[in-house]
Image (cartoon, rainbow, N blue to C red; front, side, top):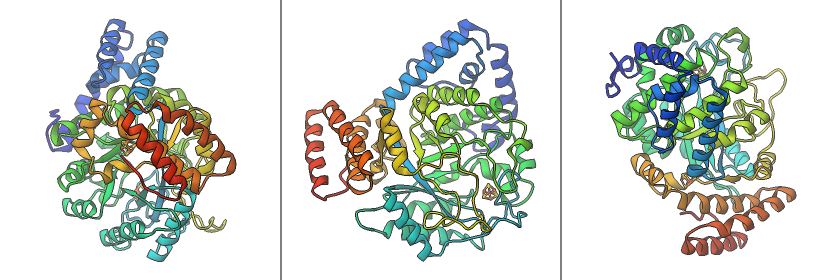
Length: 472
Ligand code: SF4
Ligand code: SF4
């Protein structure tokens, strides 16, 4: 029985509710009066239910679809302006005891090179990431209580925060590790992690169990209830997502939206971010063996519908996607992207030898961070290295209320310009620097509050003089 507030996975992600939602959406995909009503509600920017959102996703009327895209674009502009926050993944270890059939780290894969970074290697990786200009990382590890216990993860976080190399610093460490206990989430919170990210992979329990035949991850309920435990442990910024391609996308979309509704109803705060990965080619993995792959049009529609349904939730797209695909969906709702990423263990310091492969998936967008920054600016976006909210204690419901009132904009724009300026001073190529300086000159006068604008101009000057880390 569906119950949004229940703490039981099979009740807040009820299979029957998803099935009836998908059927309802299919029945109503040409019900233009209903689509209009839902669009009117969406224009209030207070979000939609999973049922309403699923009707928009199913709608196959071209004119209405154009309205959906237009509204997503407008909501993106209203809530996120033209900023795009940048981050990079850092793979600590690819030892894993799970048997996930779509991931090359599954324990049966004997030809992938297994690696685990030492603290010394983590230092070097962190310095390499700082030298690229990154300020925000997502740590990734496989699940392995012997090789990657929580103590190892905690020590690694401490190491990363402690490295101050030249003008660099990692100011926010997000983390993507296996579902764990409330006690471990509490330890992670105490270690100053930003967002806890965990992808559901698929919300369909039957498929989930088949795709995760062995290992602790096989337990659907334990995995699905992880965010509730993370919240109980004090991590109030959580990031959810599914791996599109494993199950029917309509099913996953409804499940994703139900998960967001559940977190809001049961924990008082919805997800901080939603990621939209699609299954990719990797060692031992052939994406064509999964028959639910989605094309770029469907992918764009999903992004637009998520944007409309949860306007306050950040949306992430990684280098799994090509430049062309990222370009297509950025304006529809994506607020964060990775850049210059390596998905191998230790890949930032030196490229892996041909006979030594530890990657989780093949990166499609292989451009450098500098190229990504220049590309974003060329399209009129402001690349942002901002990490201010977590450091100012703006997390969970405090963050969400600032988002909902729109007040957060008074912080985001100035922080984007100041962190971009730092990037240009310390890491950019001459060409990128020139484009960036022009962009800052053009954007700074648009900061609405005079007082804030004055402070930004002063800080920009101080950054030129060598000072760092200003924030609102
Ligand atoms: S998806 Fe995660 S848990 Fe599964 S095999 Fe890969 S690293 Fe391990
Ligand atoms: S001010 Fe907060 S919400 Fe805005 S970009 Fe920075 S960290 Fe993100």
